Every structure is written in structure tokens, then in C-alpha cells.
Amino acid sequence: MTMKNSKFSISNRSRQGGFFHLPNDNMVKTIGVATLLCLVCSIIVSGAAIVLKPQQVANKLLDKKKNILLVAGISDETKTVAELFTQVEARIVNMSTGEFTDAVDAVTFDQRKAANDAEYRVALDKSQDIASVGAISKYGNVYLVRDGDDVSKIILPISGYGLWSTMYGFIALESDARTVSGITFYEHAETPGLGGEIDNKKWQASWDGKQIVDSQGKPVLSLVKGGVTQNTPDAEYKVDGLAGATLTSNGVSNLIKFWMGEDAFGPYLERVRSATDQVSAVTSINSEKG
Ligand SMILES: Cc1cc2nc3c(=O)[nH]c(=O)nc-3n(C[C@H](O)[C@H](O)[C@H](O)COP(=O)(O)O)c2cc1C
Image (cartoon, rainbow, N blue to C red; front, top):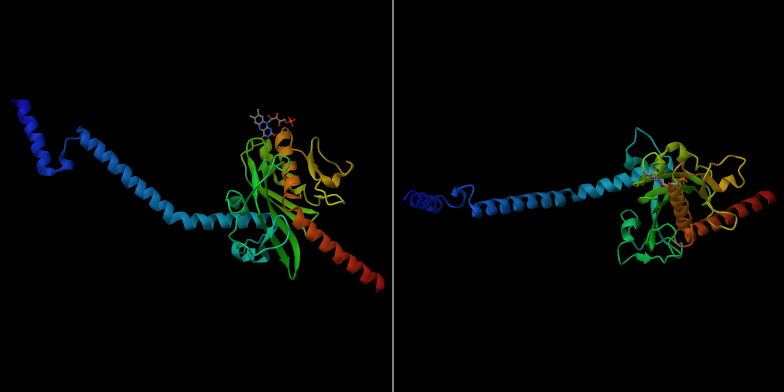
């Protein structure tokens, strides 16, 4: 009799008050509330993702610009990143010809992203893929630091596999397209204190003045175990290997060889070098005549 009464009162209450007046241990209410909660949360999360997307894109671009300025050695605490970045001109090169192209927007195009886009992706075969990147974009980002009408530095994105991760960074070259003026890594998961020493500013500074290619234009710069002194033969083509991190060091050597080589920025750098050589040949002929 009591059960009958209570059953009656539950169904009576739910009829009177609807879904939210069902008792909390009611299966329908539990599933209903959980579903509603999931729905509300997913709306909030996807709404936030949509609203914050432009901010995320802007932050990524800002971060990229900061890293480019860092490797270019451009800093001035009184100026904003945007102000400093006016010294840098973003260009796009066709990787296979080495020529500049306007096929895509130089400011927003991202060669890292494009390497996974069927429209731009160029898969590498095993013998080419010494940096273990799998594929590259057919267009590459190049950042030129301007000094009036002249280009003072060429900044190129680099990436390659270390021991645990793909390491992403930038290398800055002098206008001769041979001499290193800076290197930085902005993303990797190598072990702090071992492979993670690629972030070490002192080690990065030791790259300044090193030569990436030999007299034939072949990329030869590599990291060597045991360190480099001025007396080391061909020291200009060698950088100190990282202590206890030979595999990361090999990864860095490989990524330099790859990105400076014929399957990546090599054709572009070769063009710059021959143009520079022609200019210096003309300059020296003129000064001989004078
Ligand atoms: C926990 C742990 C983390 C390591 N992290 C790295 C690393 O980030 N990069 C690297 O090259 N080697 C790393 N190593 C060492 C490698 O396993 C390997 O021994 C080393 O690359 C050999 O370099 P070495 O000849 O200079 O000692 C790590 C080893 C251990 C045990």
C-alpha cells in the first residue's frame, strides 16, 4: 500500500513538475542531465575554439616573428615586434628552381603546415630524407633582413629529427649565403641538459662565422664530437657536438645538410651565391681599373 502510494506520488510529481522534478536516482534523469551537461560543455568548448582561433593564429605569427628577429640579432626594447619586423621582408621561393614566386602569400604561407597539404606537399624518398622530415613544401619561406636597398641577412626555417623529436628552428646566413650569423630552435622535445642544449645560447653563438658550404657549394657544415678549436682542421665547417647527445647532434648535422642542400634551399642559395660572386667579380674588376 505504501509502495503503491509512493509510486503514485513519484509519477504524479513528475507529471506535475516535468523532467527536473524526477528524483535524482531516476535513470532517465541521470542520463538526461549527463547528456545536457555534455552538450553545454561541448558548445562552450567549440565556441571558445572558434572565438579564440584568430587570436591563436595572431599569437603564432607573433611568435614566429619574434624567433626570426632573435636569429637575425634584431632587438630594441623600445620598439614593438611589428615595428622591428619592418626591417624583414618575407619572400617565397620555389624550392626546385630557387626562384622567388608570388604563387602564395609570403606573410601568411607556412612551409611547415604546407608540407602536410596535398596541394604543396613533396614527398621525399629515403635517400633524400636525411633529416627525417618525410616531406617538404614545394614553396619555402625566406626572410630577408634589409639594410637600405641591400640584403644583410637571409633567414631560413630548418627542421629535422633528433633523438626524441623533430626540432624546429631558423638559421640566419650573411648575404653571401655561405656564412652563418645565427641559429635558434623554437620547438623540440630533446632531453634538457643533453639534446636540449641546442637551446644553449653560448653553443648557438659558436655557430657565428661558420661556413655552410665548401668551395664547390656542397653543404658540409656538421657537428663534431669532442669539440672544435681554432687548430682543428677545417674548423670553419665544424661546430662543437653536444656532450652526451651524439644522436641529437647528428640530427642537427643532418638537418643543416638537408635544408642547405639541393632538395631544399640549395637551388635558392646557389642563385644568391652566384649573383653575389658576379657582383664581387664586377666590383673587383672596377677597382682594378680604377
Ligand atoms: C634519459 C636519457 C635521455 C637522453 N636524451 C638524449 C638526448 O636528448 N639526445 C641525445 O643525443 N642523447 C640522449 N641520450 C643519450 C643517448 O641515449 C645516447 O647514449 C647518446 O646520444 C650517445 O651520445 P654520446 O656518445 O655523446 O654519449 C639520453 C639518454 C638517457 C638515458
